[in-house]
Image 1 (cartoon, helix red, strand yellow):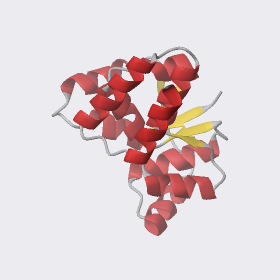
Image 2: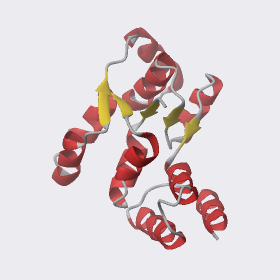
Image 3: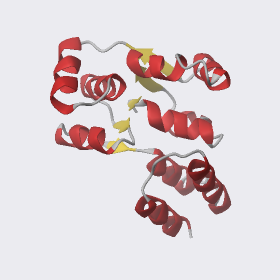
Image 4: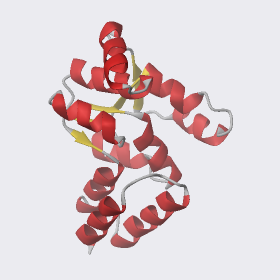
Length: 163
């Protein structure tokens, strides 16, 4: 399975102490260089930077067509990480792109890329017996405490699914 990730699902999973779910669910996860930079250049979060740098299942990959990234950024207003993640997912013919940002998800869908986000990852982990209902509830609480912006509708959908 080929999986490419944007920044936010990785940050969200780190905030709830569940980064290893990516490896358990997908094995290898590819991230473009812009996503790696977004994850490692903020000196305010040294522990998280170390986690990403030492993560054995995150593989940094260079996007082949930088011109496509530039065009996507200019026409959509997406940031570098989102744009590179979408282009990398397209180039690698990925099975899934991990992305939470609404605008980026819309663009990726229009390109025919399959998407899931943090809530989808937690749902899949629950369905595969990696998380209990209590674990999922705790993750939701920690995401909210950390100010992760996920719609109440999605939280509610996840809660209903795990009951």
